[in-house]
Length: 69
Image 1 (cartoon, rainbow, N blue to C red):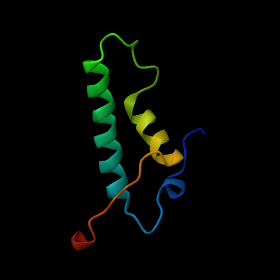
Image 2: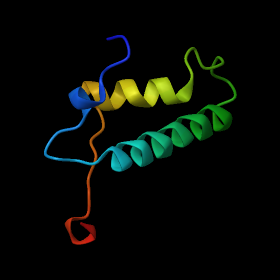
Image 3: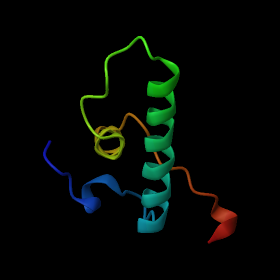
Image 4: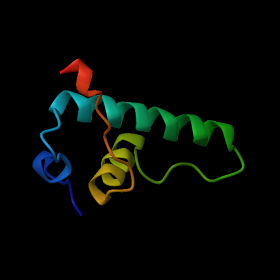
């Protein structure tokens, strides 16, 4: 999937802001994992692209706190 559209990732009236925060948090986790596992090869893709792909494929989901709406 090349550059999935935001509307394909967001479901159940989730906000764009939630998507941005979730992707940024997951990208940071990917980077931290790569730093911790120095024995693995260098990242093939940028962490943000990997995170977006993971959310688009459904591997990760956005969980919003309903009390914050």
